[in-house]
Length: 152
Image 1 (cartoon, rainbow, N blue to C red):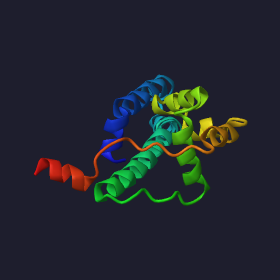
Image 2: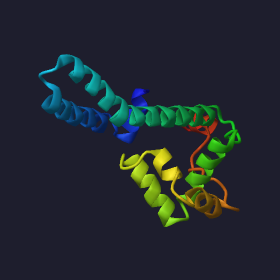
Image 3: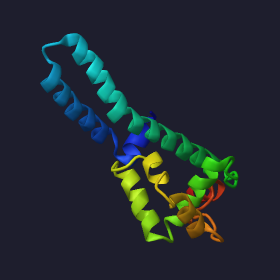
Image 4: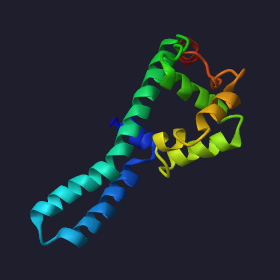
């Protein structure tokens, strides 16, 4: 995982605590059996922590790509594939639909994994309806060239 995502999302400590709590649970059940302890600790980590790690890496990579495009002054590329299109629509929908905003909050605060949220009945349709005929949000900011000009 890029350190920037853990820091940007504030997930590093949370993931560490998730692992620590899980470790305590595994110790409580399997301290007397080192082989079972190791296997159960690995299972707990795979089930509890790794999904969040992977989701954070995915977010980090997508955000890095956005920053790379922005720093070059190029317009953002059009999303390629259904998942990217849905992600962009979700980013737009959460600005106009309170349910979408709450769903993003669940993801950001690690209450539900993105896959859990997006697999809810009717959720994808609600995302697409809320984003329909609305432009993706672009924060107001100077281009890289404009910023460099201001600093010169």
